[in-house]
Length: 189
Image (cartoon, rainbow, N blue to C red):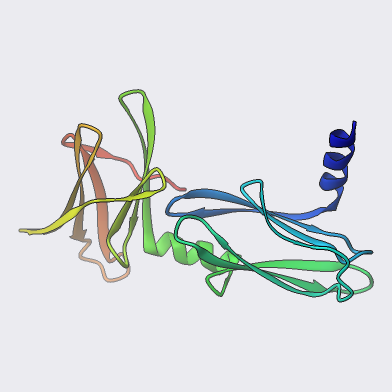
């Protein structure tokens, strides 16, 4: 009975939820704010990261880290008109919206199904790191006639990400994942 009551209370105190996409996967951030007690609780993927009880200042910020790369995140608690609060998430010192926009420019993601398993491949363009299902994997880059290729393996499958110029300044470099000589379409996540 106590579990049902505490989980019900937890649901009523959750004031904000965000799904944050990082190279190691999608992370759920939940924020509880007791507006009468000032209580603040931050959960990342269901695990409690911060708990503060009886905070006299109802506004402020909570900073914590998300994912394998320990990406810095901050929730800002602001007072709005009346007794209403506003909650703003920042990832790497960017608003959540700006972070999402920037991430689509700095990474490519592919989701594929091989040998009965799902794989999520992420290329971080700024470092050329390749992630597979939440872990950086070993890769080797090489120059080819029309660009570069970053080679790696997923299980027994040979893979590479081909980078070629689009020929258009606004589009920049186009990255394509090839697995067993077959092109894999890019995912929107």
